[in-house]
Image (cartoon, rainbow, N blue to C red):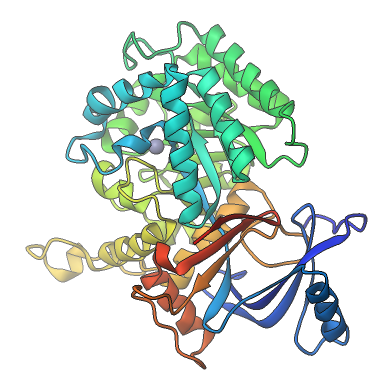
Length: 459
Ligand SMILES: [Zn+2]
């Protein structure tokens, strides 16, 4: 846990009942708590209802107009942490999902991403994307941009201005066999130079001294990169300790492609290139084997589980529970636009459904004992943990729960919003309340979103 800063004065107090899941699969309710937050967004302390200083502290903040209180039927939840978003694919959300991955990339995705050479186009899309994700309660997003440095810089500017916690990568892809001539880095050296330039840009970004926006070294995936480029980016990762993101063993095609080209698994090859570290996020990982899991765990890397995208592109159900039980860090990703929803709640629900399908099996023509994989299910509270705490751990950031020293990134959920499906009654046990929220909350229930002590969205 990071040290609690003593030198930043408390700036604001947040009152109400907060629900979170510090322990996977278990809800913890902070009933009528007062959360004291510094101007830097850090939670300085939590005063419970019976704390001796509670009454005077609350009165003081109320008198100064620095108290934010929940109404009846409302709850604080930790903000959602999305580990895998392709920012330029926002305009094709929900389109072309019938194609296999390799066709979808060539026919739909690369032509769209190539358009981000146009900064005006990029700006319009990225404003809309950041706005949409904040409205869905995504307080931290891990973005692939495109291979255009100026548009990637623009995404960083927008996230900082809107105060979305963001990890952003300028995509590197130079392999002539897998990347079309119109959308490919001209050389490995150029891709490395522009990646370095983006790291420098974020480091010097005015107003980013607290590191709300962080750069990510982003080789698209092994098929799209030459060995030379992967080696260069691996050295850069070792040199800087920066976050790294890439795709790993997503589909049959990708998994086999890397096995044939590198004579080893995706994970083993990434390790050989120096791209596996505590700050690496591997998207998907559906086909990782036991040896791969050992490597991922040994390096402390994280997996972005993208359950909606997997339905369309992965050819298999991610064995989530087996991987969690191996002690590997896992969080959730929307994989916009491979997944058709920008909502991490939709993905949390799908994570539960996918795990239940894996457990029961899916083909009724196969005898029950042959089609099922026992011990695969996860529950809704585990899925919520993935969307919050699991994402924070995977990124090695103090986010995803209400705890001293962590950031106050939070959502005000209205359990009784007009026109919504969610209806929380007085006196319901916290685990049932949170389960209802997970299954029924929609944008209409997300009344406010806060990142680092700044209100970034309100209905
Ligand atoms: Zn992806």
